[in-house]
Length: 107
Length: 107
DNA sequence: ACAATAGGCAAGCACTCACTTGCCTATCAA
DNA sequence: TTGATAGGCAAGTGAGTGCTTGCCTATTGT
View 1 (tube, rainbow over the protein chains, first blue to last red):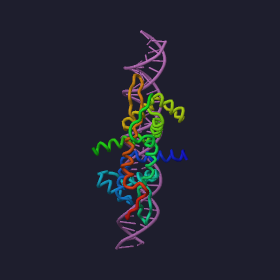
View 2: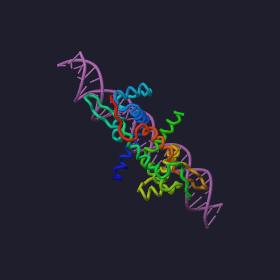
View 3: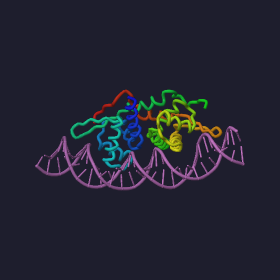
View 4: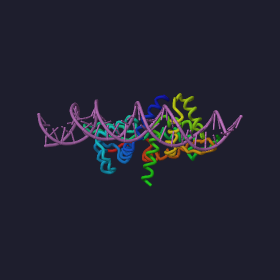
């Protein structure tokens, strides 16, 4: 189970490492259940990102592998939903011991 | 201020993208104020990571640039302290709207 | 002074990764 | 059925990155 968490954590942090993917998460936060083309046009219009459809598709695949995005198919449409739950392990990993400020200890 | 946050966020997530750097954060969570050599030996002994001192030094520089590690010099020693505060912007960015489960909306 | 310890700087290499290009399948409207 | 829309698969490319190697400075102990 520990090994499982480690692997998932790696996918999670690698998914968050790209600024375009973080913007996609922002867009899905603002409006859940968007299609690939809808995300593409939003990135192009709102964020002035000149990026191809295939690139966005690959980003969504990475986000889905990290568990941050869930998908559902309806006919020829594929809707993407945000799942922020995996982010909570970040908080639990380093913010638990002391969340009020920097720590001090004698060397 | 927004641009500043974006830049910092990029450094933050890129710093978290590497598994060795995350292990370093774990070690600093367990024991704050470690020197470079102490971190090196811990990575070697506890985590069986065959990694050079220079590599660890470069990792620490990345973590410091991201604001996750703060340093203080005393003579020939340089102590490293964890600062988990920057992690909170992750929570605030995507966990604020809904932290209980996946969202639903009509396409 | 001299050696050992703690750390820093910079160039080079190998690998990863984001993106493009090209072509393919599936669903829907006319 | 035909064309248009929504999406998928795979190979190639260029930039970024983790790590090594080699050499350097600063502080401390004898």
